[in-house]
Image 1 (cartoon, one colour):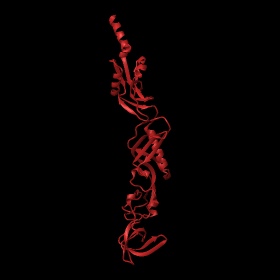
Image 2 (tube, one colour; image 1 turned 120 degrees about the vertical axis):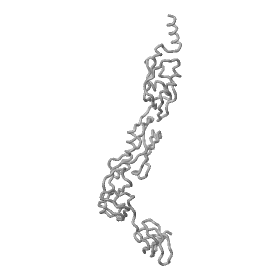
Image 3 (tube, helix red, strand yellow; image 1 turned 90 degrees about the vertical axis):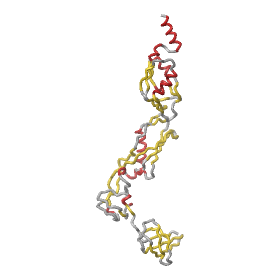
Length: 316
C-alpha cells in the first residue's frame, strides 16, 4: 500500500499522471503553422487526448518564414521532444519519417506552375496560330508554399525567339513582392506550319515559290525549322532535299549577288549627293558582305558592301 502511495506522489511531482507512461506521438506528413514558433502539436498527433493540449503547446523551434517550407527528419524532432518531455521513458513513436512544415498560406502545386508557364507561352505565340502549345519541363517543379495575399507571376523565357527557349524563369509575387524565383529547364512544344520541299530539290538549287510547301510539325522535334516560306525565296540549298522533307535554316545559303571579277555599279552617298561609278569585284560576295572593288576609273580598290545583284555601296 505504501508503494502505491509513493508512485502516486511521484507521478504528481513529475507533473504528469501515470497514463503518461503510455504516451504516443504520431508524426504528420505535413504541418501548417500559423505562428512564429513550431510546436509539438503542429507536427504530431498526441495520445492520450488528455495529454494533447499540454504537450501540444511545447515549443520546438522557430517556424519557417513566409513563403518557405522546411522538411525535418522525425529523429531530429524526437531529440527536441525528449528534451521537452523530461522523464517520459515510454514514448511510442508513429507516423511519417519526414515532416514538411510551411506557414499558413497558399500552396502552389506543380500543375499550377505549369499552367502559369503555358498560359504565358500561348499568349506569346498566339500570332503564329500554333496548336498544342506547351513548355515541356525536364524536371517538374516541387510544390511551393506562399503567403496569403494577391498572387501574381512573371514568366521570362531564356531566348528572345521564344520558340528556341531551353529555360524559363518563374517569379512568384505576393502583393507585389517576389517570394519565389525558379529557373526550370525544358523546351517548347508547338505544332506550327513549317517549310518543306514540294519536290526533290538538289544541292545548289535557288529556291522559288513552286519549290516549297508548308506542313504542321512539332518544332521541338526539329532543328532550326523555317516558319516563313517568303524568308527562304532566293536562298540556295546546301544539300539535296527529298520531297516533303523539312527545310531547316542550316540547309540554306544566300546566293552570291556579286561574282568574282564581275563589273558592278558602285554607289557613294554623302547627304543628298549620290555618285555612281563602275568597278570590278575582287571576289564573290553575298548580300551584306564587304568586299574590295577596284574603281575602273581611278584603279584604286575600295571596300564596298554588297546590297543587290551587281550593286555595291562604298563603305567610306
